[in-house]
Length: 151
Image 1 (spheres, rainbow, N blue to C red):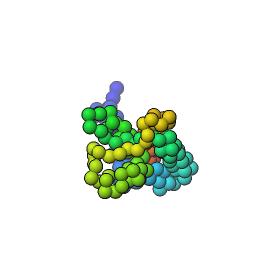
Image 2 (image 1 turned 90 degrees about the horizontal axis):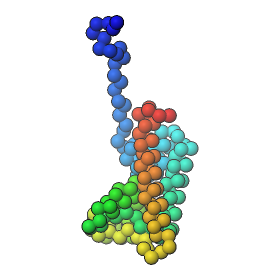
Image 3 (image 1 turned 90 degrees about the vertical axis):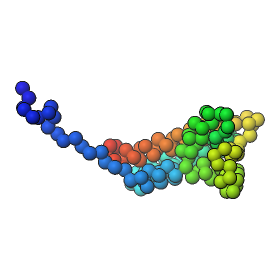
Image 4 (image 1 turned 180 degrees about the vertical axis):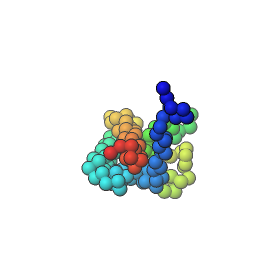
């Protein structure tokens, strides 16, 4: 028989720990730095190496970074995935379009690079998308570690 007024549970609900927004943004912008700030050096180096290697492989295979295109709604998904690469993505867009061209072409009209007739074009684009998604997963990992939900 339960005590009167116990409400079925004696423990007070734990308040969710907040993650500093700056840490999450920095973890997104620079692959591996969020883990480095949290003292997870091995994870930081491994995740940075994986994301950068995937991005560089995609560029070397003549892949196209995701840029939004008119009348192509799936290009927005590829853009979101490639945005996960953070500073690597923006550096590639500046390299291809120049700073002025990048700012004037936003969001439509940007050149994503790549050579569609190249043998590795599709594989390169896949590497670029995958590296961005991997970095976004790393950002979630940083968030979990900062909240204390994971070691």
